[in-house]
Image 1 (cartoon, rainbow, N blue to C red):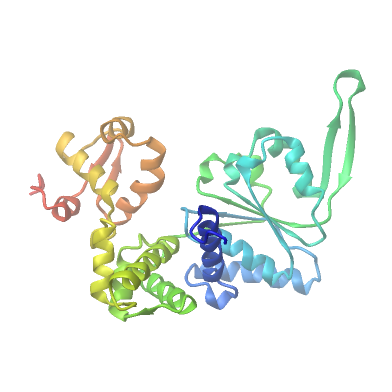
Image 2: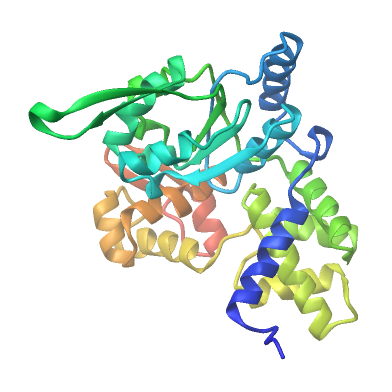
Length: 334
């Protein structure tokens, strides 16, 4: 008999759940109104011209804001198939060439974390994006020769969390560049409500507000909290997520009332206690908290700044009066 609790089966179930929650239509995609409006125009114009693909698009913003979901919607609206690849997996020219030569007319190629595309792959993709022609060099030395391969017209969609790491030549190849912003509280509440309906979860309106407030303005986090609250309600309660159930779930996860997790609070406490509230440089902060610099910069710092608990100065990071008050620590502010 198959072991339903095996790691492989769990991973498959998680993928099914993620696919279930992914919006299938524009009206199901909550938030990012300006980005959606621009994408709709670009796609509709291409369809009216009866073109097999639209302009190449670049999406950037923090992880979990919906870049991959937008790529799926773009493909669906263009009535095209989508091919998804992560840039770190394209280390050799042959890797990229194999994907490009297997594209069909009108396909959408979505490359995630495109800032990590290898330099060699980046250089050969320029003529592909501009002229749909792949130039390859076969052999070495005097016997080397160049071959040109025509690539069917396709839509290239790149996604990145670090826009500054993209080279200017690559950025300039995109016809549209769009930044995904953090979501509003009301949008996160709507996403949780929509996800609960898709997963057939019974949840109170007050519970939705509690989870949304702790979702770090990010749909992916909101859905993760909803699933954990569902588990707790199923095991410990009557299966319905009430306000109390949501609060107990957050307590177990060690998430406070504004969404700060253990490491968030550790960073604030370290700056307050070891550096007198700052300023402190990122290297010193990373050493004091035993955290990787990039993790602080990409995961913790953006949310702390969004809450107004942390600010950057020319001298380094400083905590604010609001952070002292939230942590219940004596403030140096008058």
